[in-house]
Image (cartoon, rainbow, N blue to C red):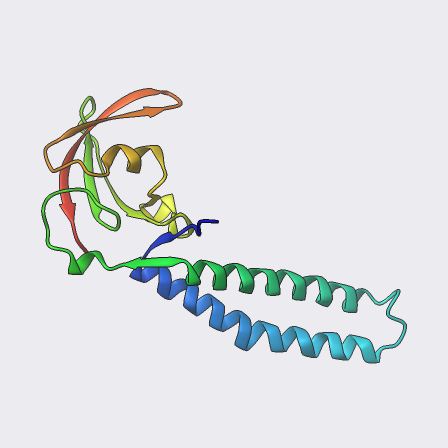
Length: 160
C-alpha cells in the first residue's frame, strides 16, 4: 500500500497547524463541557443540546483526524529556499498573460488544501497549474477550459 504524499507550502502547513491547535485546545474542551452540561439536564433522548454537541464533537474529531493524517503525509516545500531558475515549480507565484487579450493574472501554485482562487492560490492539480508546471518565463502554454482553449504567456515566476 503506497501512502499519498501531500505537497504543501510553508504557509499552508502553518495554517493547518493553527487549525489543529484551535480544534484540540479550544473546540474539543468547549464541546466536552457542553456535553457535560447537557447531560446534567436529564433525559438524553429528547435533549437537543446534548445531541447537537455530540454531533459537533464528531465533526471536530473527524477534522482533527483529517488534519493529523495530512500533516503526517505532508511534504512541506519552502520555495524561498530553492534557487530561482525562471521555471514554474510547486509553490512559485506565476504571472501569466492571456495571449489574445493581454490580460494578466497572478497565481501561486499550492497544495489541494490551500487552494483559494479568490486569494490567487490554485491547486497544483488544476488544469492551469498542470499546464504551467515545468515551463519557463517566456513560454506560451495552452490551457483547455470549459469555454475553450486559452493560450497564456508566462510573464514572470517568483519565489516568494
